[in-house]
Image (tube, rainbow, N blue to C red; front, side):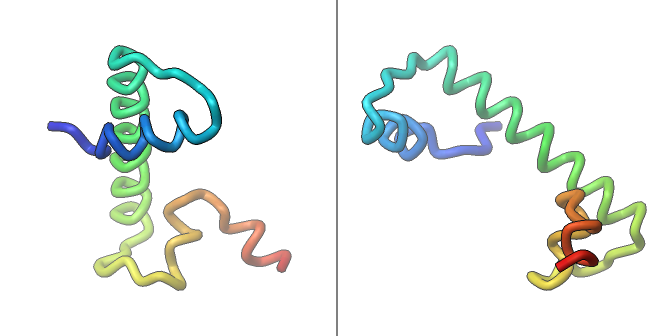
Length: 69
């Protein structure tokens, strides 16, 4: 199942003057999928039942930057 909208990603790279083949878009999609799975596992491990915007830093792995700020 595709996670990203490949046309949007391709458009973003194109705006910056970078050509990107479909094979690279597929790799980006796989990486994003792995990241989302990691975030979901962190939410489960942190006993987060509903991920609210103010708690997003916990699953992204930015807990220390939130504490320091």
